[in-house]
Image (cartoon, rainbow, N blue to C red):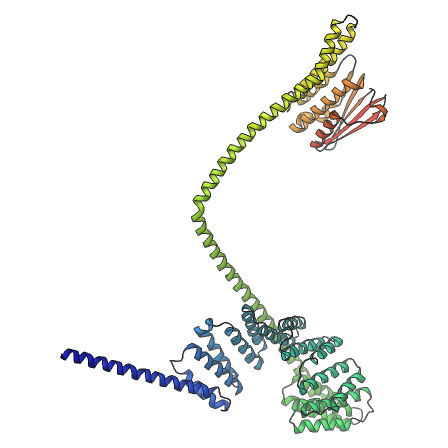
Length: 636
């Protein structure tokens, strides 16, 4: 009983302790939630919100998703308070959160923030790298709006570095991805295209792009700025009338932004003076200057002092010098080397040579430093681009390699599984093919034998049967002369020999020339003399087997036709070698073909077909009652 009581007491204390811990955790979570809510509330100052966010981030129990939100808030607050380095530091810490890989698009947002903060620090090369990284992350999830906005950021930086061609490409890509959405981004992209055109002195294209922005929703200040930019392009074209008209139309409306109003008044007065230096514009130039002094518009004052110095240059040298010095002092305060150089150029034109020396030196120093800075800037930008491209190539290479290795592994596994089946199939297929080839070869031989036998039988019947029968009749009939019977028997003999020659195996090789001479001799007779000229020049023994067979068959056919039809008493075979070509010309004094027409029957067609198989040519020249000429050409 005592043991039961002790056990019950232990369980009660454990349950009480667990409840107390849960209450404590719940209380802590509620406090953190309250602090986070206050840290993002706009009613509180940036510093107050920053302190609360720093307090939350120190808590170890904060999970990754909340930690991401707090780091994001910290980077935003540091940036607003001007601590850009701290904003970058907090943003980079986000990359160490496991939560990052669980949600699409977060890496793209972090890269964008780094690009933005680096741009604020005027580290445009680093900014460019992060903007491209952000764009590539959003490309993975096909987030068209964010892709377009990154192209916009990239285009602006490329324009800043003077890479106008690539800037135009990036801007156009941005417009494609926006597809008519987000007026603010579209306006920015067309404005970038207009600036690029103006920098390249493509003024009409610049005006076109500026005017494209006017078809979208713009604030009053944006409209005035763009119209002012259009006016400046007209000024560059020296089309002062259009430039003046554009600015005068702006001044007809109420302009609430005094800095913009001063810029328009100053530009209008300056352009009127450029058009006609006698125009009374001093009042407007001084009005713009006074507005800018009141508004503490130092950049605007640089322009005002520059315009006033130009206005007084021919009218009052001392006043022109006074305003040139003013321009120099403010541009030096604002650390604007380009404006300092412009101011120095004005001062030098108004000072004596002795007094101008120090300004000359300062001008040379500024120009050299600007040139050096620009060279370094361009080099750094080019290096960033190159390094990024190389990095992307390496990533792609490793990705491709990993994919290839995976595929190779899968292929090896599949090969191991299927090797036995494939082996059996290949062996079976090979045995079947060998068996089938043997059977086909047997059939082919049998068919060839059958075809040969049939052809010989047909020729024996058609060509010899009737001849033999007629010869027997004539022998039995005493009316026929012995000479006639002998001629018939001679014809039968020639046909028999022709059939025999056509089907005999032809002896090829090194003794072919003698074999060919035997063929010629067999047709040489008392009634028909065959003359061979220069046969040895053809070197027949060294021809390949196919050509030797073709020559033998063709001339056998030719001699058979000669005996049958030509009634020739003389045949000449002339042989000649020309470079790598061989020529054999057959000429007889027979009757030739009737009516000067060569009829290509089986014999002649066979000759032509055979000569073509060795890439040769055969030509027949017929002269009725005077004989036949056959020219054969082929390569050795």
